Length: 274
Ligand SMILES: [Zn+2]
Picture (tube, rainbow, N blue to C red):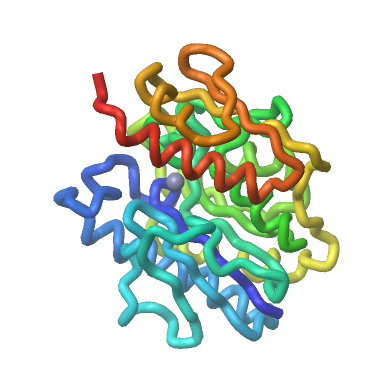
């Protein structure tokens, strides 16, 4: 049983501000320790329930957050960027189940901490008219390889977001979002224990879980915050400008939609903020 973990940071217990989650923030050392120990807790639960391998992909910011010397020695890990599948680099058909650790809600979610969708310049990401955040966007990448997502940790809103389309998912709610930069948290120890227990349950439900991928064809629609960002994103061949801030891209292959989004957003993020 091979488990894959994509770990972000904004949904980790105790994290509410970029002063913690940014590599240049004054409290980043605390955040690195926390993300590493939450990953260890998830891996422990997975191994206890019969997993034979755990591969972790560091998926936050520049993707060099995990403290390698503190990781459970049974874990293999991916660090660094850029990587073609980004937060899902390393997922393939040999993986049996995916965990999302430290995940956050999609851009615009009310009372949820440090919400965004992949980049601060994206205000909305849609596939076939449905709005998704990183949870859905990445679940569909796993879906391309036939792999189900079986666990998520973060606040109550990201858990609810995941259940919208992954009804079998096991959720570890380590904090209750109270505003964009405020949450009520479990203690560090209790959050890790909850993640460990939830991970063990998640391994057990793999046989009943489904890979998530809506049927083709796909219309990707991305709304950027500013027209100048959409101007740059529109340089992506095949993209269509729908209005001042929104672009569309049609394809029969979800991975192509992903690469279009990744490329357009890389272009958009080069625009000067005004
Ligand atoms: Zn994120």
